[in-house]
Image (cartoon, rainbow, N blue to C red):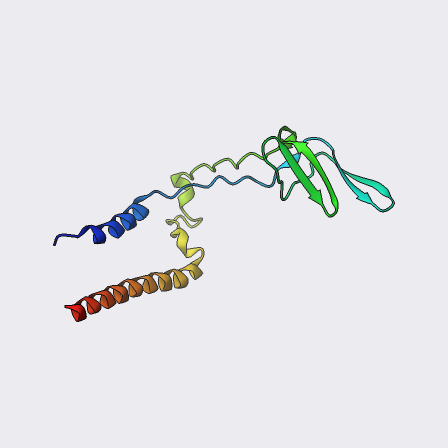
Length: 150
C-alpha cells in the first residue's frame, strides 16, 4: 500500500509525538523569596502609607521584565531587583533503592507499584478504549464517504 502525501503527514506527526521522550519538569520546592526587606507604598487621602515585607517573604506572583520585579499586596506596591530574589533549589533526586529494598518484610518480592493506587486503572482503561473507539469511528466515516463519492 502506497501512502499518499496527505495521509503520510498526520501519520508522521503522530509517530513523532509518540516517539518523543517525555520531558522531566524541574520543580522547585516553592516560590521565590525576598533576600532583603521590601517597602511597599501607596497614596491615601490622608497621605502616604507604607508597609515593609521582611526578608524571606515568599512572592506568589512576581511580575516584571528585565531586572526589576514589581510586587503588590492589596493597594500597596513596590519594586525590587531580580538579584534580590532567592529561588529555591530543585529537589535532589532520590537514590534508586537497592535489591534488598525491593523485597517486602516477609522476604518475598515487592508488588508492582501500580497496585499502590489501583484506582487509576479504571479511568486509564476508559481513556484508552475511548481513544481506540474514536479512531475506528473516524476511519469508518472517512471510508464510508469515499465509497459514496466513487
